[in-house]
Amino acid sequence: MRILGIDFGEARIGVAVSDPLGITAQALETIHWNKEWKKPLERIKELTEYYSCNTIVVGFPENMNGTVGERGHRTQKFIEKLKNHIPGVSVIPWDERLSTVQSRQALIEMGINSKKHKGKIDQMAASIILQSYMDARKMS
Image 1 (tube, rainbow, N blue to C red):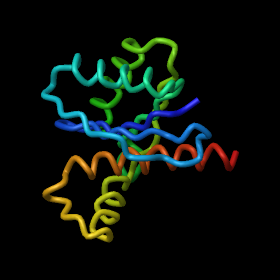
Image 2: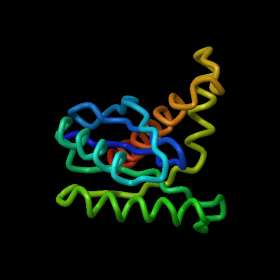
Image 3: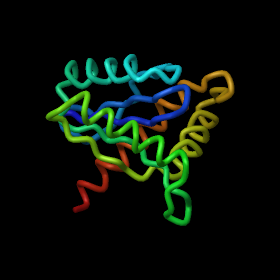
Image 4: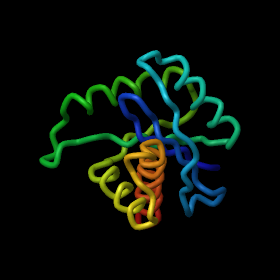
């Protein structure tokens, strides 16, 4: 079974998917949204069904000291809505600290202007979050 990775943001949601063996993560798409939950939840459900995912890993933004701030509370609300909208699929919060910084750096190294390609940053962050989760699972 494949795994979906999500980088939840205020205006965009980056999405990545694992390969069928759960070894590598690939950036998939960016979902643009405007505070209406229906569109992103429906699109994520479509992707979950299309790729036959039984797990969704959502980047969870903790502060560097491990506390949960405002972004974390908004992400928790999103996770709850996702669980209710896609029953039967496991939704796992995963530490996303520094994933956006890593994705921005990766795009710079590829010669891509991150200011012009904000959606790519979100996709790359989702793929970093998902890869981190899969790597941790392999080690345990």
